[in-house]
Every structure is written in structure tokens, then in C-alpha cells.
Length: 573
Image (cartoon, rainbow, N blue to C red; front, side):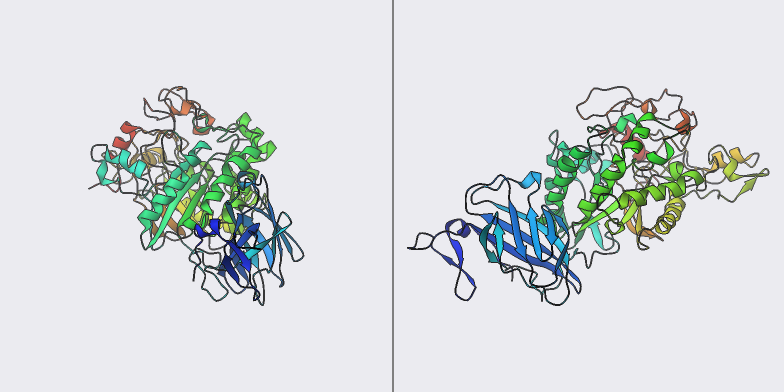
């Protein structure tokens, strides 16, 4: 029962007949003037207490540099959130005003926005709409009349686990890079995340696909089934305050630009009804909120720039704003980055990190309902499961926790950390059905160096070091780690509380350059990416373990990709 607009609207105007039904007339006929505007109001999804609606305005009068649409409800409908317009309500009266990015409305042009609302009883379409004070004709056709079933992905039936029963998007650009490497065709069909790490990435930078191009390709890959497409939202002001290699383009105080130039345009594209059938997973701002806990104040790991970000609140505000805006889109599933066990697993980090995530999830209009889950180990190397020893083992009179490697951490690996941190997040006030993702793109640690059993029991250090799969010098090492391998292939529902193992970091894309390389992406040089670096308090002053000759972060690193394939676990066939 959908009603499709055609070019006919450009040549014919809709006027209301005596019965109130819209019909088309020739605007050149005697005595008939073209209507100044039409409003297409569609109820897309409706359930017992709420609904979502899509509104399209077509302007047939002079071009506008801003616009404001008003209507009133006859019932008790209440607008609870909106997208692609500033939607407000006073009593029964509703106003939808343009955002900065869609203020221009040409003659004959159209603009669309959407909103979610609540109601009880009837949910009739408003009888009258005015655009800048001028009455428009109303078209209430299209799918989603009160008797229509909800569309998949709507607020009433957003699925518990978006990965369940769904294919996951294969980025053709990453796939081509992988396939070009010797043996790369073995993994070139694996799904990976798409990183929106600067404003230019939204439309496509350096000849790469932009957000719409990826979504269009996702629709092509989807076919008749379900498909998840994964995006990393990664451009906070003062981004990654403790790691220069992944610094970004926005200065510490540019929260306004983050909102209007980055998040708002992303939301506008994701909210396009064209993409409503996709399950869109966002990983929201990796390496941000935990920095406010571990790298501030009087701690030896403190970094001045992290103190700045804690003081100005822009990490909390930015994450809250992103969750609020992206969470308004019915088929978006937000997963917030939750660090990894080698960062947050200690007692003094664990609870406070969950608390600051709750603070961010209730900032800038966001609520915990805007958070579908959390992701750990994003772009990191922590082993999924250490099988050769447990946290409760005692060797030579000492607990495993006393070893130099574990260093009093409560967790040995990502699976145990993710499951425990999920419980902590629920205790902090997040919904009990949140799910966790674990990035397994580079944590396989296979190859000839993979231990087959525990180490010697001569000391707790020989026992742990001889048995651990994770071969890093220290769990705080994060840049282009030597000896790493591809981990578990992406899969849905692999363990209790885990929505999926994912490859959110595309294997073969560098973490940072081994030496300073000029670039126009705002990315600096971090000594943790220098193989000669002897470390700092954040990795207990160990060698960096980084590979040599690495390019700028996000750029293809052939030597790393070949090593990851060689050391994959499970091994590649």
C-alpha cells in the first residue's frame, strides 16, 4: 500500500477535494493555483504504546534558507525523539525545524525527517500542517498505517542480538587489499569494520568509499536475508589523549564541530529510510572513556592531555551526544568501547570505568536504552582465552596474580574480562540484556611460538610466561605487535553474554607509524609504535614490541598482514 512520489508532483499540484481526499489537478487550469507545499506523513512502525513516523516536505514556493513545519495532534501523542530535524512539542502543538545541514530547501525540493512518539487510544494523522506559517496539503499514504505490522528493526522489535541469523558486511576495499597478498584470498571474504575516523571519511576521502557508498554496497550484499554492517565512530575532540598515533583532527575544545560536522551528518545518512532494512552496528569512540580513569590525576600513568579532557568533559559529552543521536535511528545498534583486560582489569579501574560509561550514557540527552552493548579488545591483541593456567593457580608459593605478566590483574584474557565487565555494567545501571562484542581480529597468537601447555613450575613467572599464548612484552603494548596472528573468525553468539566475535579492526591496517610521517589526517607519531622504544609507566617500562617500517595508522601494512596470516589461530587452511 505504499505510495511512491514521481516526477508528476513537479508538474501537478495536490489540492483537497470536498471529501478531504487529495487528488491531482493541472495547475494551469483556470482558477487553480499551485499549492505552496505538500507534506507526506507516514506512520512507519506502530505498537501498543508508541510509533515512529517519517515526514517529507516538498516546497513548491520560493527557495528557503531555513524552514519550520508545525502541526497539532487531536489525540494524546507525544514526540519523544527526532532525527534530521529539531522536533519539539508544547501541549498538542509540534514544531520541526531544520538542522544546519538540511536548512536549504529549493523550489521543488524535498526534505525528510523522522521521529518517535508515544500514544494511547487512536493515533490519527494530523489534519493540518504549516510550513513557515503557510498551510500545506497532506499526503498520509504509504506503509505504516495503524493496521500495518511494524517494519523490521523498529524500536518495538529491535532484535536482542543483531548478529543472530544475519550475514555481516564485507568491505570491498579491505577485501581487495587482503586478496592482493599471497594467500590473502583465504580471509578476504571475512567481514570487518568500516572506520569513520575523520569528517572527510563520511563522504569518502583519498578515493575511498564514503558512508553512503558502503551502505549501498551493504544493501547489494544483503539480498533477501538479514545483514549487519559495522561502523567505528571515532573522531572525538582531543581524541585518544594518551596515544599520539591515533590523535584526530578535532582539538580538545571542538565539541561543537564534533556534533554538527561529524555526528549529525552520520545520523542523517543512517536515518535514510533507504537503509532501514539493514542492521547497523556502531562501535562508539574507542580508547576514550577509560582514559579518564587510568591516565589522569596523580597516577604514574597520567597524561596532561587526558587531564584536559577530563576537566572539559568533552569525552563524556561527545559519547553521550553520539549515543543519543545515533540511538534515535531505529535500526542502529550502539556498542560502546570498553577497553580490554590488560587496561581495565585491575580493581581500581574496573568499577570506575563502568561508572564513567554510565555517566556518558546519560549525558547530552542519551539514556541507557541508547546502548545495545559494549565491545572489548577493539584494535587490540589480548588473547581470547588462556587455557594453560588460571587466575587461581599457585606456583612456588605464589599466586598467578603475583607474576610480572599478570601483575595483580583479576583477568587473564578477554573472554573472562568481557563476561565479568558485562555484569559490572548491569550493576552500574545498564540494561540486563546488553550484549558484548570481542574484537578477535589480531589476538590469535598461533604459529610455532604458541605454547602447548603451562610453563615450568620453578617460579610463578616461568609458569605464566611459558604457558601464555599472548606473547607481548606487556599487556599494555598496543601498536603493530610482533608475533601476533589472526584470531577466531567472526561468528555470532559464541559464548554466554557475547553477541559476537568480530573483526572490528581490519587486519593489515596499521596502528601507527614506526617513525614520524607527515600526513593530512591529524595523526601523530607515538613512540609505542617505534620498535626501539623502551617503554613508559603505561606498559611497565617494557620494550614496545612494535613491528618496524609501519605506515600511518589506518594505512595498509603488508608485512603485518602476512605475519597475522602466518600466526593465525585457529590456523588458516
